[in-house]
Image 1: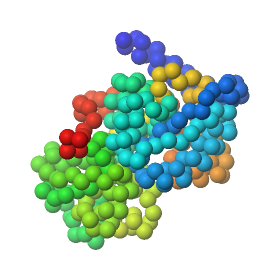
Image 2 (image 1 turned 180 degrees about the horizontal axis):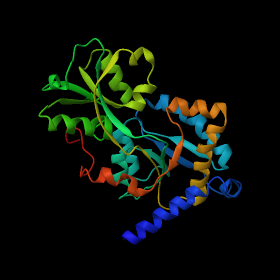
Image 3 (image 1 turned 30 degrees about the horizontal axis):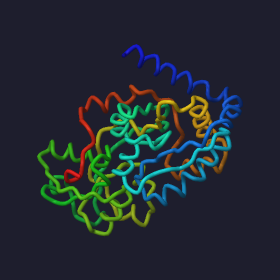
Length: 285
């Protein structure tokens, strides 16, 4: 099995390395493929994601010759359900999602965000007077979903390790966490650096980071088994080409992306080593 995994990983690296020199061939081959859905984890409101991802994927499609269609879900738990069903041919998912859904239905990573390591945060109101996470003991805290890796799982595990027990309130997205804390609905909330940087200054300026986690492997771009290699080549080529134009760089900046780089399944072995088990559930739901 290890030998087979090694061959698959070497194949993906070779596939990625060939992208820039194979774009014309990939583009021609892509014309024969059906449109492919790209599922994006809803860390922000679906409308906010759509405003960035739809024009960006249109640009990627023009470069690749394939058609890539934006898809998401109204909440992270629903996104997880659709991943489990294999509803997205390509998907951008968090590290815990990847370790789960690489087993079944068998998504395989081919890329990740360039130069990014994932770090969980705990934020509070800038004027809220919270000086230490120890003050969170017994209090309600906002999180985007039970299985949001860096924004929920890591902070809750770290707090529990310090003997600090919080009451989780799941509010559907990272943006909902930040809004709830900024409006004083929650004393604190979990998030990550990229989504905190992406939210508007009218919200971000009301918040203060009181805790940061260690760094972990970032979100994965992964494909279902059976997705054509030409489609993966085309997607990577199109994403890389964004950095070559002002409009493409602006789209990447709106995502707080520098670009994407090669990835293989074992890049997420450090997440597997945390032995987190399956996906946590809210209230047994």
